[in-house]
Length: 312
Image 1 (cartoon, rainbow, N blue to C red):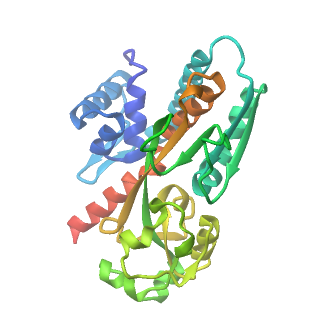
Image 2: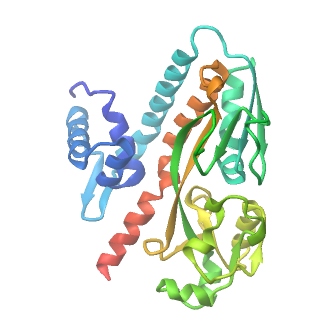
Image 3: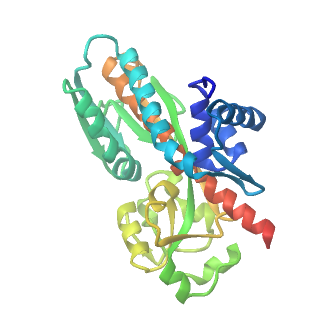
C-alpha cells in the first residue's frame, strides 16, 4: 500500500454522497476530470476498489461503505482543528443570538448546535426559531439565517448552502391517487402549503413559482405542520430535500421536471464580523452545512431521476 494524500478524502466523500463525478465536482468547485483522477489515485494508494462505475454513476463497494464513516470522522476532526485555530488560544465566551427560519432551525441546527455548546462552555447560544424576519438594525439578533442577501445597509453576509425542494407525497397517498406523469397532472391533486397571505418572504412562496394557479387546500404557517400533514397521507407538499429525505415513506413526484433551488444566507452587522463568538458560530454552521451538502442539494435524487428518464 502506498501513502495517500489526506486531501483526497474530500473527493472520496463528495462522490460517496452524490454518486456522480459532475455533482461532486460542482460541490468542490473543480471539474469532473480532477475528481476522477483523485478517486483513481486514492484507490491506487489504498490498493483497493472504493466504487463500482456504471453509466448511472458511482456506487460504493462494501469496503467503500465501511470507509465512509472513518473518512467522516477525519473530516469532522479537520473541521474542529480549523475552528479551534480560528478561535485562537483563548476559549470563546459571551452571548450570541441567532435567528433562523423554522426549517433550517428545527431540522438542521437543532441537532448540531448542542455539539458546539458542549465544546464551548463559555459561549451562551440563544436560538430564535420563528416565522418572521427579525430586525438586525434593532439588535434583535446577532446573526440571522434567511433566504435573501441584503441589498443595502451595514451588513456582512455569507452564503451557507444551496438547497433544493421537491414535491413529495406519502407512498400510500400516491398509490391511491392518479399517477403524476407531468407537471399538468399536479392540478388534479390535493396540496398542502403555506397560508398565502402570511408568507413573509418571496422565497417561501413556492406555489406561485412552481405551481401557478394551484392553491393549497390545506394551509399551515409552519413547515413542521406541513410535514406532519403530508406524512399522514393528506396530499402533496413542496418540501426541502434535507427534511424529506429522512422519511422513507415520502416519495418525490417528477423531481427532474419539478423542483426549486434556494440558498440560505447568514447575515450580521459588519461591526460584529471580527467578534470571536460570531466567527465561531458562523464557521461551525458553514462546516456542518458542507458536511450535509448531499442532503441539502439532493444531487443523487436528480441523478437517479435523470437516469430513469433516459431508460424510458
